Length: 148
Image (cartoon, rainbow, N blue to C red; front, side):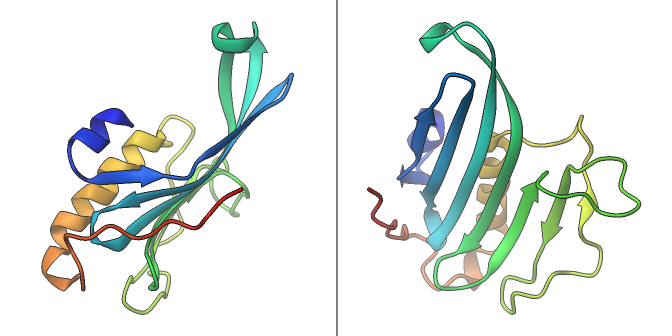
């Protein structure tokens, strides 16, 4: 995350991490240029160890990129399975001006192709560059919701 902040695309986040004996949950928002917000909901299972030495693996995830006060851009998740897909890992793509899901989605990405959070932010950064001239405030960051 620090590298993405250093690049200037990410300004901040309100991510909350809850650590239990067998699971870690990460939830919140990441503020990106152009009013882009990446919402994160991620659950990791503790495989072995504890504290900073724990070995964890992602079990479920949902990463949603949208334009604040606008519509979704894309979402990756494995929260549900679609008929005809080999597994639950998939991507939804939206028309960000209307909020309508595009016809080709959801598209399967597979267990070998599901993205990390960094991958999602890098994709959002590329999308920002591709749509820079269309964005209302391409050089501004969105305010994040207060979390408690």
